[in-house]
Length: 170
Image 1 (cartoon, rainbow, N blue to C red):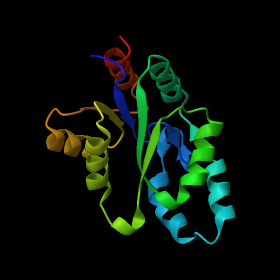
Image 2: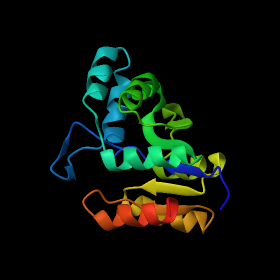
Image 3: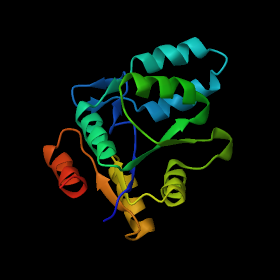
């Protein structure tokens, strides 16, 4: 496959962990909490505090850095509310997660996460996409029918990262 490839990544449960992540189990996903934060737009300091507590997934951060060094384009596709783009960008910059584009859910569009992610994968021309939700992976694989290779990343399963690395790096 020629370079640059377009590789999409999900954030929650893949590249970052919410402050509510505890010993391998995500108690609450950021994109779910994010919609509540979206409605608290007048309370920007709360959003900033929340995003300052988000933690990176070092394995995925390292993988993305390696992909960028190889010349790949990285597109973040996440269900985070677009109104939180500044806080999220600051968070990802602090974590040194390189990316070319970020596509966030526009709350007023009222798209489901599934339809939003499917639409963004197609619009950005992703050839690969890394997602942690099993149901989302099955949905995207079915709808895309081979247009994009969907990887199922499982944080506590080293084989899932090995498979992703085998296909994308080797």
